[in-house]
Image 1 (cartoon, rainbow, N blue to C red):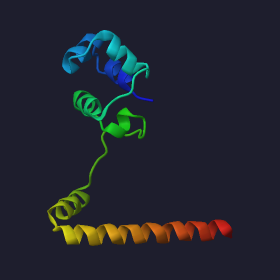
Image 2: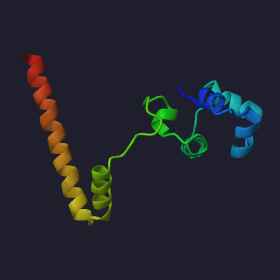
Image 3: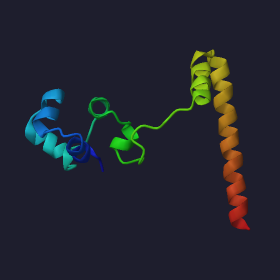
Image 4: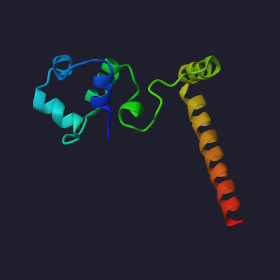
Length: 112
């Protein structure tokens, strides 16, 4: 499922506007809009740029077109990206352990 047609209409864009921006033909766009043809990652990125939305929103994985990133979260993301490989590896390991602990707690509650 995707929101191409809805986004195009809500932004007052015609099919020819999108076709021109993507350098594709009318039948190709129609096939994307009607989900007769799969979107490739490059096309998803271009559509997200055109409509100003996230890929998750475009692909109906989220109802939030542009999630807000809080300043503290952005600072953490920047620090993570700037960290050396061994630090990022340690952080990923900790997150995986936390995820396993959370899953085990859910299973324990479900078991009763």
